[in-house]
Length: 188
Image 1: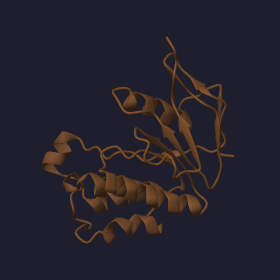
Image 2: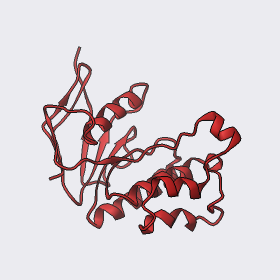
Image 3: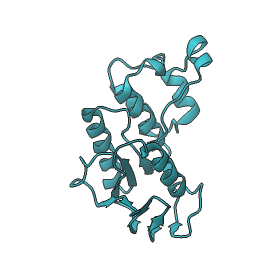
């Protein structure tokens, strides 16, 4: 068991109990709205082991698939290339480190800030998967086709001994996961 959640409670919501084991993908449905980002970051910090919660036992920390953010000055004067990003952030010995190059028009010199949402998200996903197979991720900033592709890649990793938690604002993956957990709003 990687994570045992006995129930996370805040002033506004609670997350029902669940366990995450190897070979499982859990969809945590957080609903869509202005609360999504703050709630996502709160839960991410718990599952990566950054924040302690008395009701959550993290036996193995997950790694969050970060979104690529480039400082404005760097973007203007010396943009990060795909090759540079991978050298700095990926395990170059992993086959995932070069998977982004399977997209025909992407090469080492492609500027990351020129990548649209789906390939940019795949770059982050492949980089994370080059280092670990136990992840927490979202599909924010992706269109439905890109979100589906990302989910398919993660499902394959989970099938091969990984584990994942998807923090989602839509119910699309409700029937295509090991466990589906829905955020519960506290009654006022």
